[in-house]
Length: 241
Image 1 (cartoon, rainbow, N blue to C red):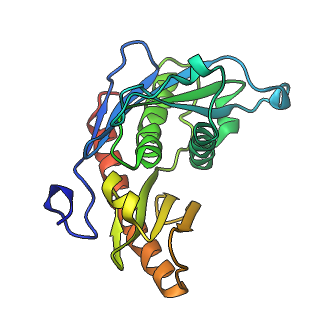
Image 2 (cartoon, rainbow, N blue to C red):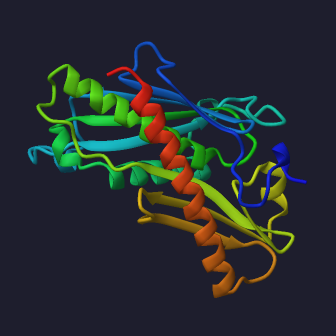
Image 3 (cartoon, rainbow, N blue to C red):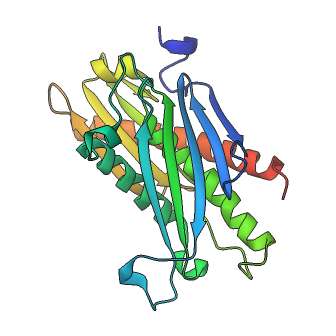
């Protein structure tokens, strides 16, 4: 029996709660079951050195977990004096995913930073962060247009992510921590609306998997992402502005 009495192709209960941060240009709290991430989007009138003078903007991300987001307290990375490899890999993934969704040249010389802070972790924190970051980014772009900072709304394609894997020889989507720990294959899938792939991260934990299993996982993951995109669109259509 899976958590929340769901079938192998079912997502955990997913919530997107926009506008949770008073000061940020865009914000959302995203929940995938017991996993909860707060995402804020901040706008700054600067760009990285390699974009200075090009007129193009930039989208980047930072990711972190609160000390008691997991079963035991983890030390803050600031106290260690450096970020861990996992943290840097995840925030780069989030940034790549959002840049694939947005025409950054339409931003002008501005940087949009997505801060993804994990409040509670039960598997799928990176996929939840990406799914929520799209909503926060869209809200920030909407505010820039409303405040006449931008003359036109930048084209943004919905982007979402989900975990998928083989557990007990069965394809399952949206793995929680217990399933992720026991999975024979663990995969994270990022895609734009319509199934256009941004990134596929897949690893066999115990024994290799074949092309048939890969195709089954991709099909299941893309179907789940389609449901997440529908939710993203619904939330944004109901939010004022």
